[in-house]
Length: 159
Image 1 (cartoon, helix red, strand yellow):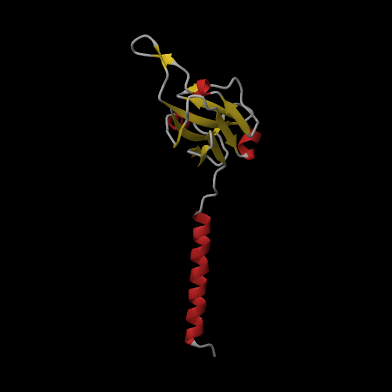
Image 2: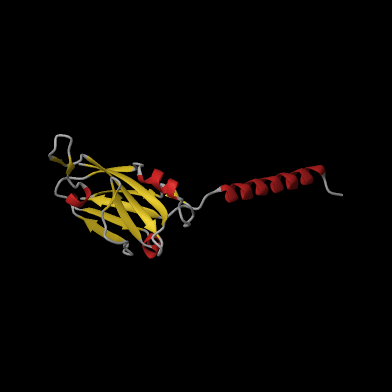
């Protein structure tokens, strides 16, 4: 005849296994990463908006494009290097700076570099002259073959 202690231990073990499985199911799989490098400094980030590789709704994409993210300081002469996980490159990606696209077409490369002036392009100032912005909101947008956004990675670059 089994003892009560053994039954309690078995019930306790079953409860622990059940809780562990529930915790695993609740965990989200990490998103692909993007990295921005200037000089010897770099920052990496998981997606700021991601729908498990599926198309983002237009409203969600618009909200995501306005977000800042990991910060990095860039000197005036430095090139800005962007690296993306192969999963992002396979789909294709584009870069948006302060709400404006800066690449003529999506890239399937895992690495691209950009001149400082491409990131901090002069804009028309309030006084009428051209002003170079002190900060730039950089968003990497994963796009599919139809050009639809599947995820975004946000960074804030400062001069």
